[in-house]
Image 1 (tube, rainbow, N blue to C red):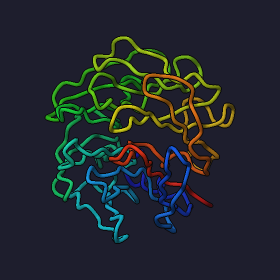
Image 2 (image 1 turned 180 degrees about the vertical axis):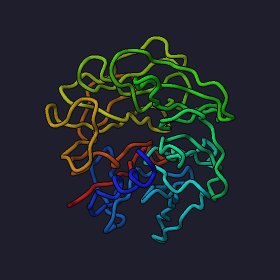
Image 3 (image 1 turned 30 degrees about the vertical axis):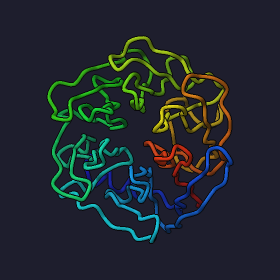
Image 4 (image 1 turned 60 degrees about the horizontal axis):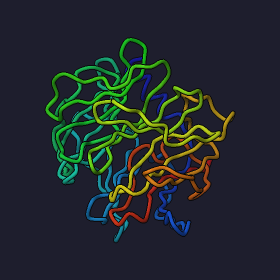
Length: 291
């Protein structure tokens, strides 16, 4: 696929977007803003004042107090997808941008206030999901040799490290705040389920065992809770996370236990691809859609 074909494919979604928050303990929802086009994947800034989201290939900042929206200037990186993460100190943002020479997603880092992107992953496709708490490494899903697995790499680039190597899809890797684990989702048992492992890929643990397809585990800043998105069994293929589906946002204790419903919504792809916990460990930002 060339870059123009990719852009046309990305622009096929004709949905209204609603940027929302939900209190994970009370279920109270708050609508922040409606858009007559697609926005995706909010990140909450560390100071609690802003949300970062992507739309039409670019990255934007939404100021919670004023409702102002400002584009983060990203130079040549104007084909970013919904896999973007802020550095632990919030001075930088890493984005997954579809390189124009082959339209494959690669990971770049640039200042959060805007600037020239710096390439991190030479190989593509690479889809970013996690930044290590010490600021030194990135975790991402990548297709190599026809198989999607979890990889890590230094923020300075160089050789990537493969952490998983089983049939099926492994995706959504995110570091725990302690730096002890990488959480991820995997189809290795049939349905898409939530797992965690050591940051070296050792000792994988099956953390969510539900009759649903569960995607994108996000750990709260205090490390106590994990939110994720769930598609009903049979509604999608285990390895697919499409838009415009009835889905649930769910919550489990980080050390394991029964999950519980946070909220039901019409969404899916773009709703909560990246960590969107508020710094006070209470609220999640997400995007719902209507046709």
